[in-house]
Image 1 (spheres, helix red, strand yellow):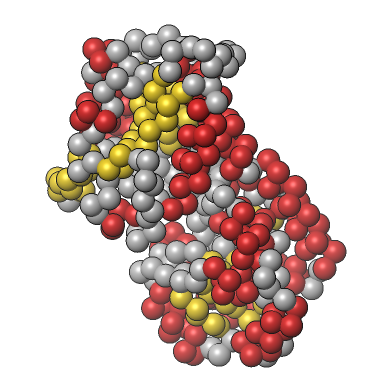
Image 2 (spheres, rainbow, N blue to C red):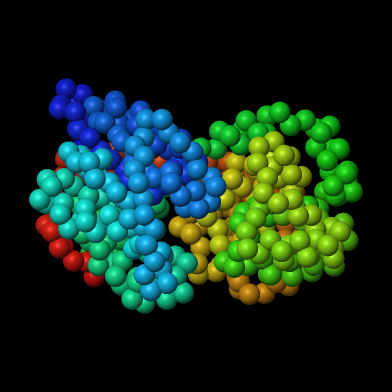
Length: 396
């Protein structure tokens, strides 16, 4: 299905609704708005700024977007979000919402989409990749509602295949390859100088070149216990090995305790901007033994190969990491000794590490925010042209 690109058509309106405005999505919304305007399509973003907890204190206000009230409800120990979309979606030709069971407005939009004369699209994974019960009631419930839309915007090709396996028409699924704006990485790296990095290397890690880094949230799925245990094994094999940990979260105390016991473990807490770039530049390997998401793109951009394990609960972006080409995925996932041995081997293999770095740079050309926006815009235009799907089109 080829969408038209006729600017003379009557202007159509697309609304993307989500409970919060995440900083990492700001560039996407701005670029998509500009891109769709080229085809005479008005793009609106509707969000709620009243609860900063939803954005983990990493939100941004977009002056052209619409801010609407939101209520949080508790039911059977779960938090439900009721976003008052109201007039913000009236008259829209297409409304895009996140696929989440707890977004109450979704059900109203999906149920009444025919009477309102508008199309509804999902933006999401297709399932909860971190669910401990992938065949449980919540995931089955999610699959039922997955078919009650006119179009799907899937994070990756793997997510698109998953949605299609439910029986949703493949020609109505856009795999946009979820990405972030990595120009900030370039801006952070440009001011760095060899002398500054050498000074930091000397003061923080005693001049060692055998440095690994962890960057991300500190919580259960990230396997912080495994990270610390394997790091201690690395230190046994490599006496000048150092681990730098950047991030925060519920398991931060585990890292603080380890850093208090081991002077070669350096807990830096959450870091941003140039300081973050300097710390990452010290490293030869990016350790992520647990859940991997968009951080894989950061590792490509910084030129530090990511080393993860084959756990079953990675986010969809794990599809971007090709074992042996732009990073490493170790199997089995529960052997810290083997993980430690492979990391130490990579630290001493300049040729192999350079090959992974080059693979990461090549991947950035494919998984860029510019390509994401172009794919997404193409899908929006196709969705606007496609006929509406029947109400209550059940999936498998």
